[in-house]
Each structure stands twice: as structure tokens, then as C-alpha cells.
Image (cartoon, rainbow, N blue to C red; front, side, top):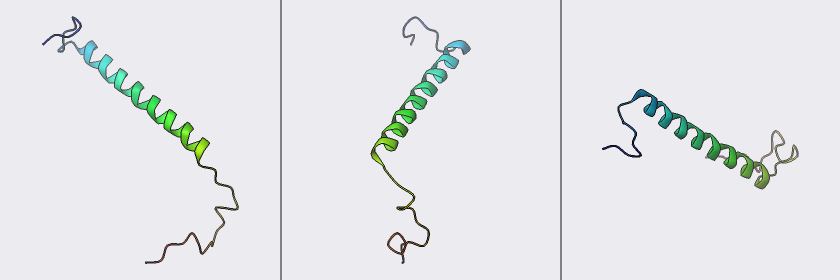
Length: 58
């Protein structure tokens, strides 16, 4: 099956597909990182060492 007049067995077409997939993945991770930075606000006080409320005991 040839889609968009591109031979699927052409090495250049395969590399282009990997590049496109990598760029999509990198973009999604970048957007997720920005959203995380905006929504998650953690100060040094919140990350205090020895905080018993943050410790999980099983």
C-alpha cells in the first residue's frame, strides 16, 4: 500500500516517519512539562527534610 505517493520501503521515508514521531513526542513532553510547572507549585518549605507528614509508613 502506498500512501501519499511514498514508497514504504524507501529508507528516507522511514527516517522521515521516525523524525515526525520524535518531534511529536518531544512536543508533547514539552507541553506536559510546561503545564506541570504552571500547575504544581512547590516551595522549599513544602519540601522540608524530615517532614513527618510527607513520610509514608507501611
